[in-house]
Every structure is written in C-alpha cells, then in structure tokens.
Image 1 (cartoon, rainbow, N blue to C red):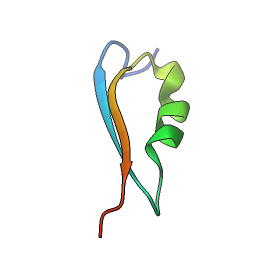
Image 2: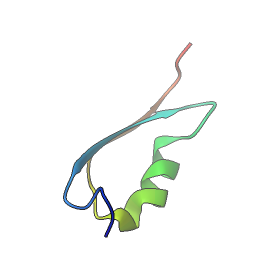
Image 3: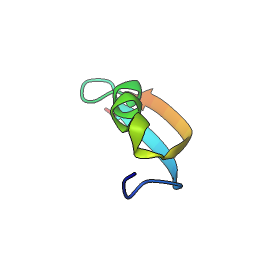
Image 4: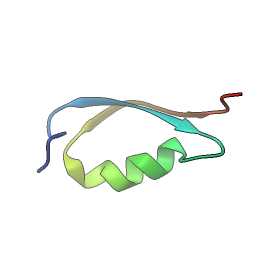
Length: 43
C-alpha cells in the first residue's frame, strides 16, 4: 500500500496528454478510492 491508500482521489486527465483512464489504471493498486475520473480538452 502506498501514500494514497484509503484516500479519495479526483482524476482530471487531458485529451492530448495523459487521459484519466490511463492514470486510473496505473494507480489501481495504490489503494486509492477513485471518486471522479474525467478526461477533458483544455484549450
């Protein structure tokens, strides 16, 4: 377990950068509770 174990996490991904589902997948084993995850286009 890491520093995110038991923490609630909001993921804001960027369309041309790192998408939220990719971040969520990489953090899946951290023990974090993903409350909200979205990928947007910030222009």
